[in-house]
Length: 332
Image 1 (cartoon, rainbow, N blue to C red):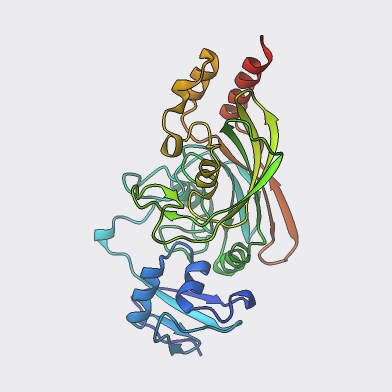
Image 2: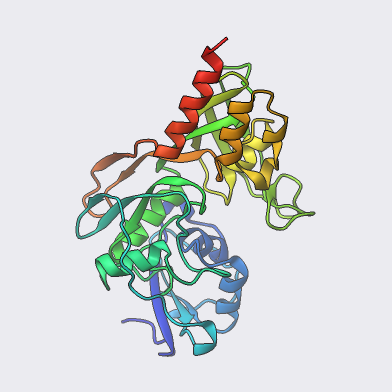
């Protein structure tokens, strides 16, 4: 028997994985439905729109059990919220697709879903054009198929869910931290060590709400591993593996160890102005996005369970920056 919720929105059902058992229901739902904030989930609970099995959840602190089914009713969008995203033909670089899963290589500059000042030419618009209604709705009707995100300026691999069952399975993998994400990063300075771990809780910065840092009132655990790849003469190429998936995690963590991404004006400002070589200075000035690329992704297929690996080559702008920095490094 399905829970009887008011029919004025979209029902989203998730099953609590064992590793999230005995945790607060608001935290569990925030993990399994990452596009919902805990405050929104708490409001849904208070309004009776969260049901465990057939019984409405009473309070956000209720501890859930593994295997329990939770149903969340999200409010139907109204005209005041803006038009629904519409299909739009975009040249998507699809690495893999089947009836359950799609994997794309997102170009830098493409916004994942609509936000302030961006209502079209987003990845969601392109996905709707290619896949129509065969995308998951767990993240809401304005974010179909979206399980995780990349920043606008970050290029590389993104996995997408073709239906709700696949979405739930992928979300559980991200929550369990079994998804392996690898990034290539061009950073200021050359680390002295060959590798390192960054174990630093982060959240919205107290002074600048658009940034993420350890200077926060609401720190959340975050862990990143990095390895040195190449000395670029005052810069370096790193491989980076974020073990958690916090907003801006790689960018904030690299800034915290004093090796911020080249081109990342939010976290480093116009540091290119102090680069002594004119060619390198111009190349970095003209590289107008963070030097960060999601290069490799490993996950289990959401239905078959087979372990899959996807690779996205470095984009043209990234390769050109590397060539310039190598020339400057190698020429006397």
